[in-house]
Image (cartoon, rainbow, N blue to C red; front, side, top):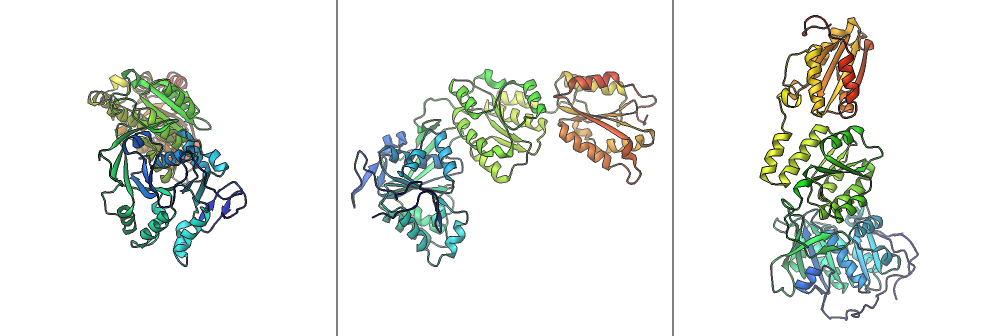
Length: 548
């Protein structure tokens, strides 16, 4: 008789048992009947191209799907489990993800696993956070597998494990791999486990044991075109064709037969889409400078829900680039959005955040399909340069060359107003002329206006000239009772940091900073105020190289 368990979540020693029903899992008879003791048969995986070509996978048996991060291994396992549920079978999933994340991931691909979990058809087991420590401290390694077997009492037809290496790379040597294979084969189930990384490099001894003794080894690769290839490194019995299967990840359907022949690297995006940018706003308040820049540089569409973008892409809308601007609290939503967007659009996908994202979060979004990530109040100039470079690369060599010329710094002030390194201090007229040209060209810059008393003005001038980046095109102009500074390619908050450095650079202990008043403006949001300053301020008298 199966073990009875209380409803809800139950902590075991190694796993978190999340079965929400009173009874332990029982085998449910599907339309093809339960597997008989000692029998072997092919089982459909739910991945139609694989099932058509290879007839499914042999059961019972252990199969491993290997692949680099972001190659689609988790989707492969979820689709495999969903096929068992659809056939009326009981299945189990051992995962490092929480139930909520598993269901959200599955739902994004059109796989509804939560109902099966609620009714006991899916047993979901989560690795404890300190799983590795508990395995190492166990009196005997068999304790772990005894717990697994108890939790799976009653039998299941399919078991998915992600990541599989968490079970067999627990100790040094090959013995943990042998123990895993003994347990997995003893379940009488068909097991599909994931292995991060490829199969060419030297493998740990335990992983090598599993790879050499498993019934099937598959290698899943994500192609530059956005499609996937599934290679049969070993299957029993061997398939008639040893070549790979090409797959496409489709929203709402998972891995399916490719629907077209276009190469996403070059020809999927219509040429008229090159100037279109979709801005997915996952922030509490989108920085006005960012929206102002995007609206000035591109044909802009702004949305606040990933589903809005999915619906547009499903209707055939095309964009040359997609920018996801997020708060750190929305990283999980950004990861899910990237996975879906990447399967539907050839456009480069960029993530940017004013928050500083953890390295693990940056890795996750890159693995989910993002082209690039910038965080910590990124410079708009850098963001634009990266977007244009990636978009040009995706459209071919000719477009790449044109975009590279557009993105490259232009030192000819007559073309876009960006000035070459010039005199240390400009008088009002040449400074105002340079700023006006930058505004006309919709240049990205901040303007800092400072006024100061006579006693501190010279020290302030010296501090400004010490802090500017002449090679980047920064300028200082003498205006009335103070100065104006053009800071090339930065946002208002970055200009505030510049201002702080300037004030810190004034002589200590003299109280000079108390006589300085400052106003910080952005070309993206404060163009009219900047024009007013250029027109209202009175020019200084005397030589441009001296303080007024």
